[in-house]
Length: 264
Image (tube, rainbow, N blue to C red; front, side):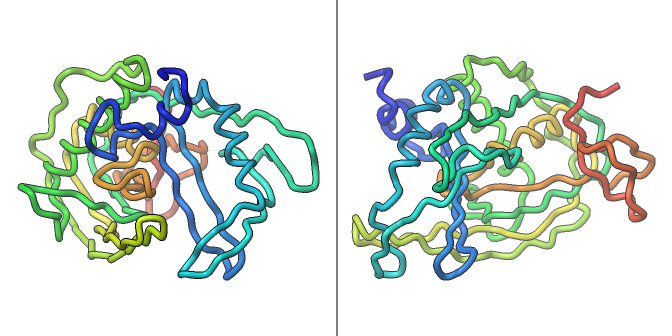
């Protein structure tokens, strides 16, 4: 059973919370008859990549229900994160996706912007946050990353035991609640998976917490992560920064993407 792909992915053997599954599945409707789905798998789950890819390819011609209507799914193509073609309906060739290695990289960033690109559904004292609060957000992110690292990544991320969360100042908070409803036709039920969208500007975030935030861009945070919730982007708003992810020159407004490289 331990080597069964279905058991590894979907059985809640390690936690009663769905945020601890080692995968994320996001989808968006591009046009009435075109859907883009994004799959993320973490850690040693990628050892099952061939079986996972085979399962995705086998969705071709399967029944898809959307807004009460039934359709036959036609799989056009699969690409990896570098836009390399893995599968195409026009070719029998299947190639292995490129994997992205994640590292814990502390970094000095005096002024930071976080933009939530999918709803942040975060609880504090038993209630969903209606506005951004730093400490519940940071603690939830740390707990999620530690759990994934321990149970699905063989503790290969060198994360320190203590991460300083003190002294962080919220300079700006432009967030709003975005409702999102998930419909399960199998269970004949609806559920809310909405949360906060928008952006916040933070000052005095510790270098170690910056390292955790950089990991969080890929691992997400909050509740219902498996449905794509809790995705965010980071920008370095500090002046006199010169290192960017794509090594481009700073823009005129000095808003620069954080570096994934080791600090000098």
